[in-house]
Length: 318
Image (cartoon, one colour):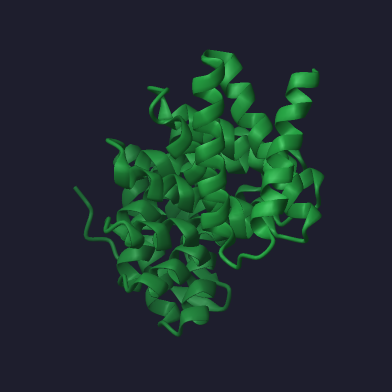
């Protein structure tokens, strides 16, 4: 126990000292964690669960250090994930597991110090994606791992899943652009992971689906992706993900349309066009699952939603 405490205290003191006098919190934390973890892991020759505990304690100390100096975990979360991946990549073969453990610890400790969970989740997803730049790892896999763990972590501490989902999807878009990846693909993949995790924890699928779509559109605008293509890909992904975990397709479909309308308003796009794109893509994706799934979605999106008459285009009949 005393050794664990010393690791936490050492990381906390290191962050406090490093943050004071620098305005670049992300890189300061990145450099500190990567260096300290690499040294500690090599020095102790820790493996498996022991190495995992070392990572956890280092993150706990870092978050507590940030809180002590009035820093916001959300602004440093990207650096935390990058620092952990960089510090452990020479000694681990499962970077996705490292990302998962790190994200989970970040969310839990952020909750304990009263930090912003949604912003922390956003930073964690950004860090996971940027970490793929120097690794043989797919952007989509890293994003899905981080956001799934974040949703489950936020749920476990009673946080708002909708806010977390929206911020995480925006972060995924921004980070993918940073590393030169295909943002639209990452957005839709991340949205699917959000839905899966939400259903698995028994979260509010309606509000989370809606917020995810809003985040997808706002993220797409920031990185220059086409709004309607983003709506279509995101709606389709969320329907397929809902089906995979036995969720309610009608809820996902209807609230995808609601999110498309709200998101379109926020970025100045055509709300009717966005509603139609979301509904049509949801219907098509459901129809590919089964005729009954298609009918369920059709019923959910037919009529007027959020004051917009939804026009369902059906060139998909076999």
